[in-house]
Structure formats: C-alpha cells, structure tokens
Image 1 (spheres, rainbow, N blue to C red):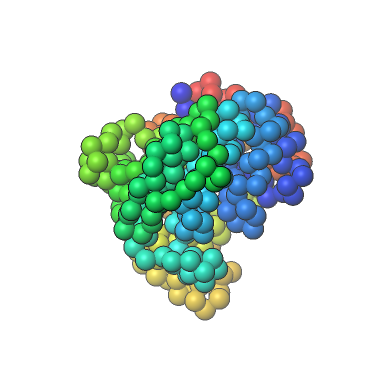
Image 2: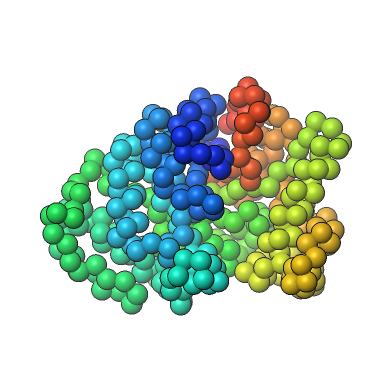
Length: 341
C-alpha cells in the first residue's frame, strides 16, 4: 500500500493538536514536521497526544545540530507517548548552516551521519535492553551512562530512521544504516530509478542489508488551480522554488542527469548577483515537467499516485501544506482518489 502523507504547516505550537486531528480525520497516513523556523520535535509532542492512528516524523531534523544522545532521547519519548508511531527523519544540511548557524562540525558528512545513526541505535539498545554502552565510532562515542539518565524500555523500541539526501554518497550512507530514504523534492522518477536506487543498494551491500526493504518517501511539487490565472500563479511558485534549489551546487548531480548544467551555472550567477527575479524564467519547461505534477481535486490525487508508482516508492506527499481556508472535504477527495487509484 502506498501512503499519502502531509507536511505540517508552520503554525504556533498551541494550534498543532487541532491541525493534527484534522489530518487524521481526512485520512492522511503520516504528518511530517520540518526544521525551518521552528524546532521539528516540539510539534510532534502535540501530534502524539492528540491523535490515535496518524504516524508522524521529522522531514527532516538536522542531525548535526544535536548530539546523538539528545536525538535518541527525543525520539524515544515520542515513540513511547504515541504507542510506536514515530519516524525519525534526519538530514545533514549544508556546511554553511551547520557551522555558521548551529556552530557544529560538518567534516565528512556522509561518514559522520552514518556513525551518528549507529550511535543512536547503540543508545536505544541500552535504553531497551540495558546493554553496556560501548560504542566508539570515528566521530561519536557512547561509553557511559547510569540509571539516573536511562529512561528504560518501551513497548515499541524499533524506531524507523530515515535519512535524506540527493547525491550518490548520501544515498550510499542511507543504504548502509537507514530504514528509509527521504527523497528531495528536486527529483524525478528517472533520477530515483537510475541514481538513487543503485546508490542505496551499493551502500546496503557494505553491511549485507536489503536496500529493497527500505521505505522511500517523495514530496512532489504540484501545480493546480481552478482558473488559468491560479494555475499560472501556481506554476510560477514552483518555478521560483526549483530555481532556488537549482542555483545551489548541492543539486548539480540531479541537474546533470537532466542535461541542465548550463542553466544551473546561470542560476548560480544570478543568485550571487542577487537577481532572484530573473531566475524562474531560466527554468526549462522540460525540467518543470520532470519535477512537478498537475491537477485539481481528485485528479491531483491520481497524479501523485502515478508519480509514486513511476518512482516505485511507498510514500508520497505534496510539496505544500494544507491551507487553513481549504475545506476538509476538498482534501478528502484528493486523498480518496489517491488511495483508490
């Protein structure tokens, strides 16, 4: 079964419980929080307490912003209070933000995050089974604890860990240690099948793991609108987002796959000059067709399901949150169409 997920709106913490109940009533399978202007874990405490069925997770929490032990504690508490509905989605962010915003280390990010996840699981084994702390990795260690700091076992100790990435090396890291992979919205079914999956399998082979057992989640750009003006506005919004991502060197591999390296360099030059108004016009129509789906209502649900099938993934969402003035019945139709397709 393919899951239809949703991103949590950037709203005050006191409003999250009601929002989560709305998502659950509509029929979404998982709600994802983000590390943007707000902490990604705090809203999930409200989701856990206000819902009964809805899964929830971070997409993503910046791994290097917190020690592995701190992240292990946060995920353990959320897993316990929700009866096993937590998914821990991690990402590395980029060097400038990790070093200059979070004041943390960023060297060898793929190797570091691999050790980070190994450390998380070592902490959880100690919490659950009382294992003596003995993890000594290349970047992190977990070698000391006493009962005062150990929350003890929980009913559902297996917390899925997803890793986010774009390029081959991070995909390999996910294949080594993660249960799932958070695909970036700058993707296409071809890129997933030709670049992401082989890299996941390459990483998994290092530890004798089965990459095909991993869960892949895709957030997808969507263009919709009841009128031509609304559709044009929606398309321009996606073009602006694609242009922003494409101006960043981190996404060059994806753009190379789609023969857009020339455009990528032009966009980077415009970004350096601060000419963001000119950037969307440079995004090729072929690239837009590769990254975005189109449709309204039920057609949008069917379009997202078709994208999930083409990419061979188990979970999808639209790269936008539910708007507060959108009737629940409208989203109900989208979700129903997705699940019926």
